[in-house]
Image (tube, rainbow, N blue to C red):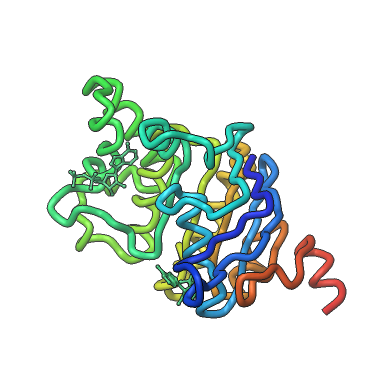
Amino acid sequence: MITVEKLTKVYGNGDSAVTVLDNLDFSVQQAEIFAVVGPSGAGKSTLAQCVNLLERPTSGSVIVNGENLSQLTEAQLRAARRRIGTVFQSDGLFSRRTAAENISLPLDYLGVTRADAKKRVGELLERVGLSSHAKHYPHQLSGGQRQRVGIARALALKPTVLLADEATSGLDPASTASITALLKELRTDLGLSILFITHEMETVLQVADSVARLDNGHIVESGRVVDLLRDA
Ligand code: ADP
Ligand code: ADP
């Protein structure tokens, strides 16, 4: 579960201070896909970076599974970051490594044995529907398939929360639909809390259980997607 409490981010100081996130409050339950949607400049990447621990909030908290990330030291942050799976717009794969090798990276990095890593990578490839593509290089995969590899890598260390930052934004509608279907499966099968950040309202309607609309650093509306659709 992810809880964001009175999260505020201010860049600069004095006369040049800009409040990019102003007192955000929301939570992502276990087995829930919670979308944050908003136009360019709304503060979405800043929010992602605060959850991702690449930026520290100016005030307020990000709490993941009861652990207040805002209070951690740098060394603790590195460990905490491993407990949050992150999927970006750009898949971030290494072009000279196969799908399987890319998925194995976080495991290799932590010194998991070869045999255990191989078994885990096999499970992950199956989970994202790419068992037959283990030895493919990124350029031999479609955009949607590469994003699946990115998702498998994000899951390698068994996180309980997943941050998807514009994860479908570069994709055509069919690939987007396959990624949103996969995320919904992961939510249900693994009970993941997924924070899905995007500028695409159509994708929110496909994927999310709940949504908050972010504009100019403020949450201007939030609720269950079914209720929004009913009222529309
Ligand atoms: P989005 O991802 O929704 O487009 P961002 O989080 O990138 O929004 O940016 C929100 C606002 O914060 C923008 O006005 C942007 O110019 C400003 N901003 C982002 N990063 C910085 C920074 N490092 N210093 C100053 N202003 C920033
Ligand atoms: P290198 O130092 O080999 O360039 P990086 O630190 O840039 O490696 O990480 C390479 C890739 O592996 C990145 O895409 C990153 O997301 C992923 N990665 C590295 N360490 C971890 C980790 N501990 N947990 C999850 N993913 C990781």
